[in-house]
Image (cartoon, rainbow, N blue to C red; front, side, top):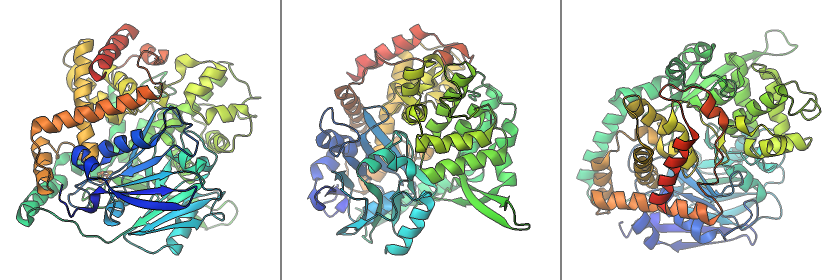
Length: 584
Ligand code: SF4
Protein backbone atom coordinates (compact mmCIF):
# COMPACT_ATOMS: atom_id res chain seq x y z
CA UNK A 1 0.00 0.00 0.00
CA UNK A 2 1.39 3.41 -0.97
CA UNK A 3 1.96 5.79 1.96
CA UNK A 4 0.25 8.65 0.18
CA UNK A 5 -2.92 6.62 -0.37
CA UNK A 6 -5.86 8.06 1.59
CA UNK A 7 -7.49 4.62 1.45
CA UNK A 8 -6.21 3.93 4.97
CA UNK A 9 -8.35 6.72 6.43
CA UNK A 10 -11.30 5.42 8.40
CA UNK A 11 -14.02 7.94 9.24
CA UNK A 12 -15.71 7.13 12.57
CA UNK A 13 -19.07 8.83 13.12
CA UNK A 14 -21.00 8.83 16.38
CA UNK A 15 -24.64 9.71 15.73
CA UNK A 16 -25.51 10.00 19.43
CA UNK A 17 -22.94 12.71 20.19
CA UNK A 18 -22.85 14.12 16.66
CA UNK A 19 -19.07 13.75 16.59
CA UNK A 20 -16.59 12.31 14.13
CA UNK A 21 -12.91 11.53 13.89
CA UNK A 22 -10.55 10.08 11.28
CA UNK A 23 -8.01 7.37 12.06
CA UNK A 24 -5.23 6.22 9.76
CA UNK A 25 -5.54 2.41 9.81
CA UNK A 26 -2.63 1.32 7.65
CA UNK A 27 -2.47 -1.90 9.72
CA UNK A 28 -5.92 -2.90 8.49
CA UNK A 29 -5.52 -2.03 4.83
CA UNK A 30 -2.04 -3.57 4.59
CA UNK A 31 -3.22 -6.93 5.88
CA UNK A 32 -6.84 -7.04 4.65
CA UNK A 33 -6.61 -4.87 1.51
CA UNK A 34 -10.07 -3.29 1.79
CA UNK A 35 -13.76 -4.10 1.27
CA UNK A 36 -14.89 -7.33 2.93
CA UNK A 37 -11.55 -8.00 4.65
CA UNK A 38 -11.34 -4.60 6.30
CA UNK A 39 -15.08 -4.44 7.04
CA UNK A 40 -15.02 -7.85 8.76
CA UNK A 41 -12.24 -6.67 11.08
CA UNK A 42 -13.96 -3.36 11.80
CA UNK A 43 -17.24 -5.12 12.52
CA UNK A 44 -15.59 -7.54 14.94
CA UNK A 45 -13.86 -4.61 16.68
CA UNK A 46 -16.82 -2.24 16.85
CA UNK A 47 -19.79 -4.57 17.41
CA UNK A 48 -20.16 -5.65 21.05
CA UNK A 49 -20.80 -9.39 21.35
CA UNK A 50 -24.50 -10.19 21.66
CA UNK A 51 -25.64 -6.61 20.95
CA UNK A 52 -29.13 -5.85 19.73
CA UNK A 53 -28.88 -5.45 15.93
CA UNK A 54 -31.41 -2.64 16.21
CA UNK A 55 -29.67 -1.02 19.17
CA UNK A 56 -27.38 2.02 18.96
CA UNK A 57 -24.21 -0.01 19.50
CA UNK A 58 -24.59 -2.02 16.28
CA UNK A 59 -22.13 -0.39 13.86
CA UNK A 60 -22.63 0.22 10.17
CA UNK A 61 -19.35 -0.30 8.35
CA UNK A 62 -18.92 0.78 4.73
CA UNK A 63 -15.63 -0.16 3.04
CA UNK A 64 -14.10 0.18 -0.41
CA UNK A 65 -10.87 -1.18 -1.86
CA UNK A 66 -7.44 -0.24 -3.23
CA UNK A 67 -8.56 -0.66 -6.85
CA UNK A 68 -11.67 1.53 -6.49
CA UNK A 69 -11.49 4.53 -8.77
CA UNK A 70 -8.48 3.10 -10.59
CA UNK A 71 -9.68 -0.04 -12.37
CA UNK A 72 -12.94 -0.84 -14.16
CA UNK A 73 -15.61 -2.70 -12.21
CA UNK A 74 -13.93 -2.23 -8.82
CA UNK A 75 -17.18 -0.46 -8.13
CA UNK A 76 -18.77 -1.99 -5.05
CA UNK A 77 -19.04 -0.81 -1.49
CA UNK A 78 -19.18 -3.53 1.14
CA UNK A 79 -21.54 -2.87 4.06
CA UNK A 80 -21.16 -4.88 7.27
CA UNK A 81 -23.35 -4.82 10.34
CA UNK A 82 -24.99 -7.29 12.66
CA UNK A 83 -28.05 -8.40 10.74
CA UNK A 84 -31.48 -7.88 12.32
CA UNK A 85 -32.74 -10.55 9.91
CA UNK A 86 -30.44 -13.42 10.87
CA UNK A 87 -28.92 -12.18 14.14
CA UNK A 88 -25.37 -12.67 12.92
CA UNK A 89 -23.18 -11.43 10.07
CA UNK A 90 -24.87 -8.79 7.94
CA UNK A 91 -23.05 -8.18 4.69
CA UNK A 92 -24.35 -6.50 1.60
CA UNK A 93 -22.62 -5.11 -1.50
CA UNK A 94 -23.73 -2.20 -3.64
CA UNK A 95 -22.43 -0.30 -6.64
CA UNK A 96 -23.90 2.86 -8.11
CA UNK A 97 -21.55 5.73 -7.32
CA UNK A 98 -21.08 4.66 -3.71
CA UNK A 99 -17.57 3.20 -3.83
CA UNK A 100 -15.96 5.84 -6.02
CA UNK A 101 -17.54 8.66 -3.98
CA UNK A 102 -16.27 7.25 -0.66
CA UNK A 103 -12.79 6.83 -2.09
CA UNK A 104 -12.75 10.30 -3.67
CA UNK A 105 -13.90 11.78 -0.37
CA UNK A 106 -10.63 10.47 1.05
CA UNK A 107 -11.72 7.35 2.95
CA UNK A 108 -11.30 3.62 2.72
CA UNK A 109 -14.01 2.96 5.27
CA UNK A 110 -16.74 4.69 7.26
CA UNK A 111 -17.95 3.37 10.62
CA UNK A 112 -21.22 4.71 12.00
CA UNK A 113 -22.36 4.02 15.55
CA UNK A 114 -24.89 5.44 18.00
CA UNK A 115 -28.41 6.68 17.46
CA UNK A 116 -29.64 10.18 16.74
CA UNK A 117 -32.51 11.41 18.87
CA UNK A 118 -34.19 13.01 15.87
CA UNK A 119 -34.18 11.87 12.24
CA UNK A 120 -31.05 13.02 10.44
CA UNK A 121 -29.07 12.42 7.34
CA UNK A 122 -25.32 12.42 7.17
CA UNK A 123 -23.52 14.56 4.58
CA UNK A 124 -19.83 13.82 4.05
CA UNK A 125 -18.12 16.14 1.58
CA UNK A 126 -14.40 15.38 1.65
CA UNK A 127 -13.18 16.32 5.13
CA UNK A 128 -16.48 17.97 6.10
CA UNK A 129 -19.10 15.95 7.99
CA UNK A 130 -22.57 17.41 8.59
CA UNK A 131 -25.46 16.04 10.61
CA UNK A 132 -28.52 17.41 8.77
CA UNK A 133 -32.05 17.49 10.07
CA UNK A 134 -34.20 14.91 8.23
CA UNK A 135 -37.46 15.38 10.14
CA UNK A 136 -39.29 16.47 6.99
CA UNK A 137 -37.99 13.47 5.05
CA UNK A 138 -38.99 10.92 7.68
CA UNK A 139 -42.30 9.21 6.88
CA UNK A 140 -42.28 10.24 3.23
CA UNK A 141 -44.15 7.65 1.23
CA UNK A 142 -41.52 7.28 -1.51
CA UNK A 143 -37.78 6.75 -1.11
CA UNK A 144 -37.46 8.14 -4.66
CA UNK A 145 -38.75 11.54 -3.52
CA UNK A 146 -36.31 11.53 -0.61
CA UNK A 147 -33.46 11.11 -3.10
CA UNK A 148 -34.78 13.97 -5.24
CA UNK A 149 -34.96 16.36 -2.28
CA UNK A 150 -31.46 15.52 -1.08
CA UNK A 151 -30.17 16.09 -4.61
CA UNK A 152 -31.58 19.61 -4.48
CA UNK A 153 -30.03 20.36 -1.10
CA UNK A 154 -26.55 18.89 -1.31
CA UNK A 155 -23.48 19.86 -3.37
CA UNK A 156 -21.38 17.41 -5.38
CA UNK A 157 -23.64 16.80 -8.37
CA UNK A 158 -22.10 14.14 -10.61
CA UNK A 159 -19.66 13.08 -7.91
CA UNK A 160 -21.82 12.19 -4.96
CA UNK A 161 -23.59 9.07 -3.81
CA UNK A 162 -26.94 9.19 -2.02
CA UNK A 163 -27.85 6.16 0.08
CA UNK A 164 -31.28 6.24 1.70
CA UNK A 165 -34.02 4.17 3.24
CA UNK A 166 -37.74 4.05 2.59
CA UNK A 167 -40.61 3.44 4.96
CA UNK A 168 -39.64 -0.21 5.34
CA UNK A 169 -36.35 0.85 6.92
CA UNK A 170 -38.08 3.37 9.18
CA UNK A 171 -40.51 0.64 10.32
CA UNK A 172 -37.53 -1.70 10.79
CA UNK A 173 -38.71 -4.50 8.54
CA UNK A 174 -35.78 -6.86 9.05
CA UNK A 175 -35.25 -7.23 5.30
CA UNK A 176 -35.50 -3.58 4.36
CA UNK A 177 -32.84 -2.31 2.01
CA UNK A 178 -30.85 0.87 1.42
CA UNK A 179 -31.37 2.34 -2.05
CA UNK A 180 -28.41 3.95 -3.78
CA UNK A 181 -28.69 6.29 -6.78
CA UNK A 182 -32.28 5.02 -7.20
CA UNK A 183 -31.58 1.77 -8.99
CA UNK A 184 -28.90 0.05 -6.88
CA UNK A 185 -29.29 -1.40 -3.40
CA UNK A 186 -27.67 -2.75 -0.32
CA UNK A 187 -30.43 -5.30 -0.64
CA UNK A 188 -30.00 -8.17 1.72
CA UNK A 189 -30.01 -8.81 5.45
CA UNK A 190 -31.66 -5.61 6.64
CA UNK A 191 -29.21 -2.73 6.46
CA UNK A 192 -32.29 -0.49 5.95
CA UNK A 193 -33.62 -1.49 9.37
CA UNK A 194 -30.26 -0.70 10.98
CA UNK A 195 -30.38 2.78 9.38
CA UNK A 196 -33.97 3.12 10.66
CA UNK A 197 -33.02 2.06 14.19
CA UNK A 198 -30.45 4.87 14.26
CA UNK A 199 -32.90 7.49 12.93
CA UNK A 200 -30.56 7.72 9.97
CA UNK A 201 -32.54 8.48 6.83
CA UNK A 202 -29.67 8.82 4.38
CA UNK A 203 -25.96 9.25 3.80
CA UNK A 204 -24.53 11.53 1.10
CA UNK A 205 -20.84 11.31 0.25
CA UNK A 206 -18.81 13.29 -2.28
CA UNK A 207 -15.16 14.17 -2.91
CA UNK A 208 -12.57 15.14 -5.49
CA UNK A 209 -9.32 13.40 -4.51
CA UNK A 210 -6.89 11.96 -7.02
CA UNK A 211 -5.31 8.54 -6.59
CA UNK A 212 -1.67 7.42 -6.72
CA UNK A 213 -0.24 4.49 -8.70
CA UNK A 214 3.31 3.08 -8.69
CA UNK A 215 3.95 3.25 -12.46
CA UNK A 216 1.77 5.08 -14.94
CA UNK A 217 2.93 2.93 -17.83
CA UNK A 218 2.16 -0.39 -16.15
CA UNK A 219 -1.11 0.97 -14.81
CA UNK A 220 -2.23 2.03 -18.29
CA UNK A 221 -1.36 -1.37 -19.76
CA UNK A 222 -3.28 -3.35 -17.14
CA UNK A 223 -6.19 -0.93 -17.38
CA UNK A 224 -6.39 -1.28 -21.15
CA UNK A 225 -6.42 -5.09 -20.98
CA UNK A 226 -9.20 -5.18 -18.37
CA UNK A 227 -11.24 -2.58 -20.21
CA UNK A 228 -10.95 -4.49 -23.44
CA UNK A 229 -12.01 -7.76 -21.83
CA UNK A 230 -14.95 -6.02 -20.15
CA UNK A 231 -16.20 -4.54 -23.41
CA UNK A 232 -15.54 -7.37 -25.84
CA UNK A 233 -16.15 -10.67 -24.03
CA UNK A 234 -19.43 -12.38 -25.01
CA UNK A 235 -20.39 -12.93 -21.34
CA UNK A 236 -20.12 -9.22 -20.57
CA UNK A 237 -21.95 -8.31 -23.77
CA UNK A 238 -24.86 -10.43 -22.62
CA UNK A 239 -24.92 -8.60 -19.30
CA UNK A 240 -25.09 -5.39 -21.30
CA UNK A 241 -27.73 -6.57 -23.78
CA UNK A 242 -30.16 -8.37 -21.51
CA UNK A 243 -28.75 -7.98 -18.00
CA UNK A 244 -29.18 -10.65 -15.37
CA UNK A 245 -32.74 -11.47 -16.58
CA UNK A 246 -30.95 -13.40 -19.34
CA UNK A 247 -31.17 -16.24 -16.76
CA UNK A 248 -34.95 -16.63 -16.76
CA UNK A 249 -35.34 -18.80 -19.86
CA UNK A 250 -32.30 -21.09 -19.38
CA UNK A 251 -33.21 -21.78 -15.76
CA UNK A 252 -36.79 -22.45 -16.72
CA UNK A 253 -35.69 -24.83 -19.45
CA UNK A 254 -33.48 -26.67 -16.98
CA UNK A 255 -36.35 -27.03 -14.53
CA UNK A 256 -34.51 -24.91 -11.95
CA UNK A 257 -36.74 -21.82 -11.71
CA UNK A 258 -38.51 -21.85 -8.32
CA UNK A 259 -42.20 -21.44 -9.02
CA UNK A 260 -45.16 -21.02 -6.64
CA UNK A 261 -43.06 -21.39 -3.52
CA UNK A 262 -40.97 -24.08 -5.19
CA UNK A 263 -43.85 -26.47 -5.55
CA UNK A 264 -42.69 -26.52 -9.15
CA UNK A 265 -39.46 -25.63 -10.91
CA UNK A 266 -40.83 -24.52 -14.29
CA UNK A 267 -43.05 -21.52 -14.90
CA UNK A 268 -45.51 -21.61 -17.76
CA UNK A 269 -45.29 -17.82 -18.28
CA UNK A 270 -41.48 -17.57 -18.20
CA UNK A 271 -41.46 -16.31 -21.79
CA UNK A 272 -43.56 -13.28 -20.78
CA UNK A 273 -41.17 -12.12 -18.06
CA UNK A 274 -37.84 -13.11 -19.57
CA UNK A 275 -34.91 -10.77 -20.20
CA UNK A 276 -35.67 -10.97 -23.91
CA UNK A 277 -39.36 -10.05 -23.44
CA UNK A 278 -38.57 -7.07 -21.19
CA UNK A 279 -35.79 -5.85 -23.50
CA UNK A 280 -38.06 -6.01 -26.53
CA UNK A 281 -41.14 -4.45 -24.99
CA UNK A 282 -40.15 -2.24 -22.07
CA UNK A 283 -36.44 -1.39 -22.01
CA UNK A 284 -36.17 2.37 -21.47
CA UNK A 285 -32.48 2.76 -20.69
CA UNK A 286 -29.35 1.04 -19.46
CA UNK A 287 -27.18 2.36 -16.67
CA UNK A 288 -23.78 1.57 -15.23
CA UNK A 289 -22.20 1.82 -11.83
CA UNK A 290 -19.37 4.36 -11.66
CA UNK A 291 -16.28 3.24 -13.51
CA UNK A 292 -17.96 0.32 -15.24
CA UNK A 293 -18.05 0.03 -19.04
CA UNK A 294 -20.55 -2.87 -18.98
CA UNK A 295 -23.81 -1.11 -17.99
CA UNK A 296 -25.80 -4.17 -16.94
CA UNK A 297 -28.52 -2.19 -15.15
CA UNK A 298 -31.76 -2.42 -17.11
CA UNK A 299 -34.58 0.03 -16.60
CA UNK A 300 -38.08 -0.56 -17.94
CA UNK A 301 -40.29 2.33 -19.00
CA UNK A 302 -43.83 1.51 -17.90
CA UNK A 303 -46.48 3.78 -19.38
CA UNK A 304 -49.72 3.74 -17.45
CA UNK A 305 -52.94 5.59 -18.33
CA UNK A 306 -54.43 7.93 -15.74
CA UNK A 307 -57.40 6.41 -13.92
CA UNK A 308 -59.89 9.09 -15.03
CA UNK A 309 -58.18 11.52 -17.43
CA UNK A 310 -58.19 10.38 -21.09
CA UNK A 311 -54.89 10.64 -23.03
CA UNK A 312 -52.98 11.31 -19.85
CA UNK A 313 -50.12 8.96 -19.00
CA UNK A 314 -47.56 8.50 -16.31
CA UNK A 315 -44.27 6.84 -17.24
CA UNK A 316 -42.43 5.05 -14.43
CA UNK A 317 -38.81 3.99 -14.82
CA UNK A 318 -38.41 0.66 -13.02
CA UNK A 319 -35.24 -1.38 -12.70
CA UNK A 320 -35.45 -5.12 -13.21
CA UNK A 321 -32.95 -7.89 -12.52
CA UNK A 322 -33.14 -11.66 -12.46
CA UNK A 323 -33.52 -12.05 -8.70
CA UNK A 324 -36.39 -9.59 -8.23
CA UNK A 325 -38.12 -11.09 -11.28
CA UNK A 326 -37.81 -14.60 -9.84
CA UNK A 327 -38.94 -13.55 -6.36
CA UNK A 328 -42.02 -11.54 -7.29
CA UNK A 329 -42.74 -13.39 -10.56
CA UNK A 330 -42.55 -17.21 -10.74
CA UNK A 331 -42.28 -17.58 -6.97
CA UNK A 332 -45.72 -15.90 -6.69
CA UNK A 333 -47.06 -17.28 -9.97
CA UNK A 334 -47.11 -13.74 -11.43
CA UNK A 335 -46.65 -13.92 -15.20
CA UNK A 336 -48.15 -10.57 -16.16
CA UNK A 337 -45.06 -8.48 -17.11
CA UNK A 338 -46.67 -5.15 -16.23
CA UNK A 339 -48.12 -6.44 -12.97
CA UNK A 340 -44.67 -7.72 -12.09
CA UNK A 341 -43.08 -4.34 -12.85
CA UNK A 342 -45.62 -2.69 -10.56
CA UNK A 343 -44.65 -5.09 -7.77
CA UNK A 344 -40.96 -4.28 -8.30
CA UNK A 345 -41.77 -0.58 -8.23
CA UNK A 346 -43.81 -0.85 -5.03
CA UNK A 347 -40.96 -2.57 -3.21
CA UNK A 348 -38.49 0.02 -4.56
CA UNK A 349 -40.61 2.90 -3.30
CA UNK A 350 -41.02 1.29 0.13
CA UNK A 351 -37.39 0.19 0.36
CA UNK A 352 -37.87 -3.59 0.71
CA UNK A 353 -35.50 -6.36 -0.32
CA UNK A 354 -37.44 -8.08 -3.08
CA UNK A 355 -35.54 -11.34 -2.75
CA UNK A 356 -36.98 -11.75 0.74
CA UNK A 357 -40.38 -10.18 0.04
CA UNK A 358 -41.22 -12.74 -2.68
CA UNK A 359 -40.56 -15.90 -0.63
CA UNK A 360 -42.31 -14.29 2.37
CA UNK A 361 -45.45 -13.70 0.31
CA UNK A 362 -45.16 -17.15 -1.27
CA UNK A 363 -45.08 -18.76 2.16
CA UNK A 364 -48.08 -16.64 3.26
CA UNK A 365 -50.04 -17.71 0.16
CA UNK A 366 -49.41 -21.38 0.83
CA UNK A 367 -50.10 -20.99 4.54
CA UNK A 368 -53.48 -19.46 3.67
CA UNK A 369 -54.19 -22.18 1.14
CA UNK A 370 -53.40 -24.89 3.71
CA UNK A 371 -55.49 -23.23 6.42
CA UNK A 372 -52.59 -22.42 8.76
CA UNK A 373 -53.81 -18.84 8.67
CA UNK A 374 -57.18 -17.41 7.69
CA UNK A 375 -58.43 -14.12 6.30
CA UNK A 376 -58.47 -12.89 9.90
CA UNK A 377 -54.67 -12.96 9.88
CA UNK A 378 -54.40 -11.65 6.33
CA UNK A 379 -56.82 -8.88 7.28
CA UNK A 380 -59.22 -9.83 4.51
CA UNK A 381 -56.64 -10.25 1.75
CA UNK A 382 -57.18 -13.37 -0.32
CA UNK A 383 -53.61 -14.12 -1.41
CA UNK A 384 -53.66 -16.24 -4.56
CA UNK A 385 -50.94 -17.26 -6.99
CA UNK A 386 -50.66 -14.78 -9.83
CA UNK A 387 -52.90 -12.14 -8.26
CA UNK A 388 -50.40 -9.27 -8.39
CA UNK A 389 -52.93 -6.64 -7.31
CA UNK A 390 -53.45 -8.39 -3.97
CA UNK A 391 -49.70 -8.86 -3.61
CA UNK A 392 -49.26 -5.12 -4.16
CA UNK A 393 -51.47 -4.44 -1.16
CA UNK A 394 -49.86 -7.20 0.93
CA UNK A 395 -46.45 -5.63 0.26
CA UNK A 396 -47.71 -2.34 1.61
CA UNK A 397 -49.11 -4.06 4.70
CA UNK A 398 -45.80 -5.80 5.45
CA UNK A 399 -44.40 -2.31 5.91
CA UNK A 400 -47.41 -0.85 7.75
CA UNK A 401 -47.81 -3.97 9.96
CA UNK A 402 -51.49 -3.47 10.84
CA UNK A 403 -51.66 -6.72 12.88
CA UNK A 404 -49.48 -9.49 14.37
CA UNK A 405 -49.50 -11.51 11.16
CA UNK A 406 -48.00 -8.72 9.03
CA UNK A 407 -45.61 -7.86 11.86
CA UNK A 408 -44.45 -11.51 11.69
CA UNK A 409 -44.11 -11.33 7.89
CA UNK A 410 -41.99 -8.21 8.42
CA UNK A 411 -39.46 -10.45 10.20
CA UNK A 412 -39.15 -13.02 7.40
CA UNK A 413 -40.33 -16.57 6.73
CA UNK A 414 -38.21 -18.20 9.40
CA UNK A 415 -39.91 -16.15 12.08
CA UNK A 416 -43.42 -16.23 10.54
CA UNK A 417 -43.33 -20.02 10.13
CA UNK A 418 -42.02 -20.52 13.67
CA UNK A 419 -45.16 -18.70 14.82
CA UNK A 420 -47.82 -20.02 12.44
CA UNK A 421 -46.38 -23.36 11.24
CA UNK A 422 -45.46 -24.40 7.70
CA UNK A 423 -41.70 -24.58 8.31
CA UNK A 424 -41.35 -27.27 5.66
CA UNK A 425 -42.28 -24.78 2.98
CA UNK A 426 -40.68 -21.70 4.54
CA UNK A 427 -37.89 -21.14 2.05
CA UNK A 428 -35.01 -19.56 3.89
CA UNK A 429 -31.44 -20.65 4.54
CA UNK A 430 -29.88 -19.57 7.80
CA UNK A 431 -32.76 -17.10 8.12
CA UNK A 432 -32.23 -15.52 4.70
CA UNK A 433 -34.86 -16.18 2.03
CA UNK A 434 -33.83 -18.36 -0.89
CA UNK A 435 -32.50 -17.05 -4.19
CA UNK A 436 -33.84 -18.14 -7.56
CA UNK A 437 -31.84 -21.29 -8.20
CA UNK A 438 -33.15 -24.81 -7.76
CA UNK A 439 -30.27 -26.17 -9.82
CA UNK A 440 -29.27 -28.98 -7.45
CA UNK A 441 -27.52 -29.78 -4.18
CA UNK A 442 -24.69 -27.26 -4.46
CA UNK A 443 -27.04 -24.27 -4.81
CA UNK A 444 -28.84 -25.05 -1.57
CA UNK A 445 -25.84 -26.26 0.42
CA UNK A 446 -23.97 -23.18 -0.79
CA UNK A 447 -26.64 -20.89 0.67
CA UNK A 448 -26.85 -22.83 3.92
CA UNK A 449 -23.10 -22.65 4.55
CA UNK A 450 -22.36 -19.25 2.98
CA UNK A 451 -21.41 -16.38 5.25
CA UNK A 452 -24.37 -14.33 3.99
CA UNK A 453 -26.60 -17.30 3.13
CA UNK A 454 -26.65 -15.89 -0.37
CA UNK A 455 -26.13 -17.41 -3.81
CA UNK A 456 -23.31 -14.88 -4.22
CA UNK A 457 -21.24 -16.37 -1.41
CA UNK A 458 -19.95 -19.34 -3.36
CA UNK A 459 -22.17 -19.67 -6.46
CA UNK A 460 -23.26 -23.23 -5.70
CA UNK A 461 -25.64 -23.03 -8.67
CA UNK A 462 -22.60 -22.89 -10.92
CA UNK A 463 -21.11 -26.06 -9.35
CA UNK A 464 -24.43 -27.80 -10.06
CA UNK A 465 -24.37 -26.77 -13.69
CA UNK A 466 -20.68 -27.24 -14.41
CA UNK A 467 -19.66 -30.21 -12.21
CA UNK A 468 -22.60 -32.12 -10.78
CA UNK A 469 -24.21 -32.36 -14.16
CA UNK A 470 -21.19 -34.52 -15.17
CA UNK A 471 -20.50 -36.52 -12.01
CA UNK A 472 -21.48 -36.86 -8.36
CA UNK A 473 -19.38 -35.29 -5.61
CA UNK A 474 -18.89 -36.72 -2.15
CA UNK A 475 -19.91 -34.39 0.71
CA UNK A 476 -16.22 -33.61 1.33
CA UNK A 477 -15.60 -32.83 -2.34
CA UNK A 478 -18.62 -30.55 -2.51
CA UNK A 479 -17.70 -28.78 0.73
CA UNK A 480 -14.13 -28.23 -0.49
CA UNK A 481 -15.28 -26.89 -3.87
CA UNK A 482 -17.66 -24.40 -2.23
CA UNK A 483 -15.13 -23.29 0.40
CA UNK A 484 -12.49 -22.76 -2.29
CA UNK A 485 -14.83 -20.53 -4.28
CA UNK A 486 -16.08 -18.63 -1.24
CA UNK A 487 -12.52 -18.00 -0.04
CA UNK A 488 -11.49 -16.67 -3.47
CA UNK A 489 -14.53 -14.41 -3.46
CA UNK A 490 -13.22 -12.84 -0.24
CA UNK A 491 -10.35 -11.50 -2.32
CA UNK A 492 -12.66 -10.13 -5.00
CA UNK A 493 -14.91 -8.53 -2.42
CA UNK A 494 -11.97 -7.11 -0.50
CA UNK A 495 -10.98 -5.45 -3.77
CA UNK A 496 -14.71 -4.67 -4.23
CA UNK A 497 -14.72 -6.09 -7.74
CA UNK A 498 -18.17 -6.71 -9.18
CA UNK A 499 -18.67 -10.48 -9.30
CA UNK A 500 -19.90 -10.19 -12.88
CA UNK A 501 -16.26 -9.50 -13.76
CA UNK A 502 -14.88 -12.52 -11.88
CA UNK A 503 -13.71 -14.19 -15.10
CA UNK A 504 -11.79 -11.07 -16.09
CA UNK A 505 -10.14 -10.61 -12.70
CA UNK A 506 -8.33 -13.93 -12.61
CA UNK A 507 -5.43 -14.48 -10.19
CA UNK A 508 -2.72 -13.03 -12.45
CA UNK A 509 -4.77 -9.93 -13.18
CA UNK A 510 -5.57 -9.41 -9.50
CA UNK A 511 -1.88 -9.73 -8.57
CA UNK A 512 -0.85 -7.30 -11.32
CA UNK A 513 -3.49 -4.76 -10.23
CA UNK A 514 -2.41 -5.06 -6.61
CA UNK A 515 1.22 -4.58 -7.53
CA UNK A 516 0.39 -1.38 -9.39
CA UNK A 517 -1.02 0.10 -6.17
CA UNK A 518 1.83 -1.01 -3.94
CA UNK A 519 0.90 -4.50 -2.68
CA UNK A 520 3.59 -7.09 -3.27
CA UNK A 521 1.81 -10.43 -2.88
CA UNK A 522 2.18 -13.83 -4.48
CA UNK A 523 -0.58 -16.27 -5.29
CA UNK A 524 -0.06 -18.33 -2.14
CA UNK A 525 -0.31 -15.30 0.12
CA UNK A 526 -3.38 -14.11 -1.74
CA UNK A 527 -5.20 -17.42 -1.26
CA UNK A 528 -4.17 -17.55 2.39
CA UNK A 529 -5.62 -14.08 2.89
CA UNK A 530 -8.91 -15.14 1.27
CA UNK A 531 -9.26 -18.19 3.51
CA UNK A 532 -8.35 -16.14 6.59
CA UNK A 533 -11.08 -13.57 5.82
CA UNK A 534 -13.57 -16.38 5.21
CA UNK A 535 -12.67 -17.93 8.59
CA UNK A 536 -12.93 -14.55 10.30
CA UNK A 537 -16.50 -14.13 9.06
CA UNK A 538 -17.36 -17.58 10.26
CA UNK A 539 -15.84 -16.73 13.64
CA UNK A 540 -18.04 -13.64 13.91
CA UNK A 541 -21.13 -15.68 13.06
CA UNK A 542 -20.32 -18.26 15.71
CA UNK A 543 -19.59 -15.52 18.23
CA UNK A 544 -23.14 -14.26 17.64
CA UNK A 545 -24.73 -17.68 18.13
CA UNK A 546 -24.72 -19.20 14.64
CA UNK A 547 -24.17 -22.92 14.28
CA UNK A 548 -24.11 -25.08 11.16
CA UNK A 549 -25.71 -27.91 13.19
CA UNK A 550 -28.67 -25.70 14.07
CA UNK A 551 -29.55 -24.89 10.46
CA UNK A 552 -33.12 -25.64 9.43
CA UNK A 553 -33.38 -27.45 6.10
CA UNK A 554 -36.70 -26.63 4.41
CA UNK A 555 -38.36 -29.90 3.40
CA UNK A 556 -39.59 -28.35 0.16
CA UNK A 557 -36.09 -28.29 -1.40
CA UNK A 558 -35.94 -32.07 -0.91
CA UNK A 559 -39.41 -32.69 -2.37
CA UNK A 560 -39.22 -30.79 -5.65
CA UNK A 561 -36.97 -32.47 -8.16
CA UNK A 562 -33.96 -30.47 -9.33
CA UNK A 563 -32.16 -30.98 -12.66
CA UNK A 564 -29.04 -32.78 -11.46
CA UNK A 565 -29.97 -35.03 -8.58
CA UNK A 566 -32.32 -35.49 -5.73
CA UNK A 567 -31.16 -34.03 -2.46
CA UNK A 568 -31.15 -35.85 0.84
CA UNK A 569 -30.89 -34.39 4.29
CA UNK A 570 -28.03 -36.81 5.13
CA UNK A 571 -25.96 -35.55 2.21
CA UNK A 572 -26.54 -31.92 3.21
CA UNK A 573 -25.67 -32.56 6.87
CA UNK A 574 -22.52 -34.48 5.94
CA UNK A 575 -21.41 -31.59 3.69
CA UNK A 576 -22.09 -29.03 6.41
CA UNK A 577 -20.11 -31.12 8.92
CA UNK A 578 -17.10 -30.99 6.67
CA UNK A 579 -17.51 -27.23 6.16
CA UNK A 580 -17.53 -26.77 9.93
CA UNK A 581 -14.31 -28.74 10.30
CA UNK A 582 -12.44 -26.78 7.60
CA UNK A 583 -13.55 -23.34 8.78
CA UNK A 584 -13.18 -23.97 12.52
S1 SF4 B 1 -21.49 -5.05 -14.32
FE1 SF4 B 1 -23.40 -4.10 -13.62
S2 SF4 B 1 -23.48 -4.36 -11.37
FE2 SF4 B 1 -21.36 -4.76 -12.06
S3 SF4 B 1 -20.33 -2.78 -11.81
FE3 SF4 B 1 -21.08 -2.88 -13.95
S4 SF4 B 1 -23.11 -1.91 -13.95
FE4 SF4 B 1 -22.54 -2.35 -11.79
